[in-house]
Picture (tube, rainbow, N blue to C red):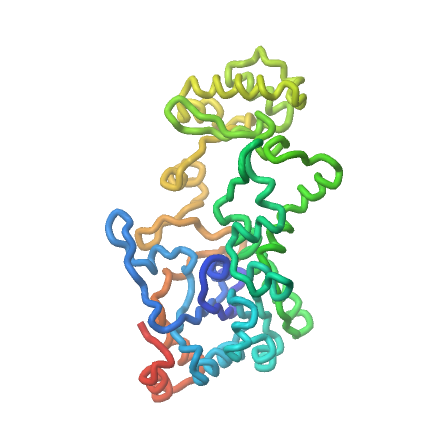
Length: 386
């Protein structure tokens, strides 16, 4: 029973950050009911053999799914009935789409004044770019985040879509919804949460904007944490693998050069940029003399801050991850376990990713619709059952 057990969240089906936020809330125990478009059935994708897409769609785990035609007045009314019983709603459409459907904040809050209405967009609900299309890479460009990631003299490197979609988007939305639920629990009044990826990725950059204001942030790839410093970087090993190196503190750096076998280096020069080119060359040469597994054996469990760079296939089998059950397997799909961890109300994966409309009959019964009305909606194509 997770800490959000007893809360109900309506999730308007989407892609990217919306489903990730819904997954987080579901992992923590919320009853997340996803409103899917009829006909959006599961497909099959190759994964060694054939794996049903809904099984491998990890960010859809823990949901109940209802298939609803939102172009139908009866379908819209059905969603509003869900809203009446919900604590929160999350949606990730362009600004104005929910309003045109008749499911905007005004309509939903009129039905349920305690509702927390979470909105996820790239550019936000207003501003010159609010109506424009975009993706993670565009949002983190405008926030300044992308310009700071990469090596000196090279183009910025997109960090997958972790910074905009997930860190600055989904997690910001989940955080905002939880804060809204706390507020509504205190005074009984809901509100709209405007979570924009450009805002969230800018927020993630707060320490670096502070450093920039103090004159402590220079050109990309020349700073302490952006591969500028040779003691905070990635090095190749003799077998084609890599290790990450991050002993920022002098005592940890001293241990690194001792265990690496380059103890003749003077650790007192660690923070002198003039020594960095030669230090980088020396570290690269030393790491290249042995395999990744060798260096893991040398450095594992020490304070030298060296770790093997593991692939997605390797990470779940690492002894530390195994000991903590950081990854789990469900329906043959290895995936990250819920996080963070709670001492009294543990989070869990409550169910596998649903097929579209899998829980329509169940949810309609929960709303109080009788069998005749449920059958009418299905026969009219307003709802879909798997």
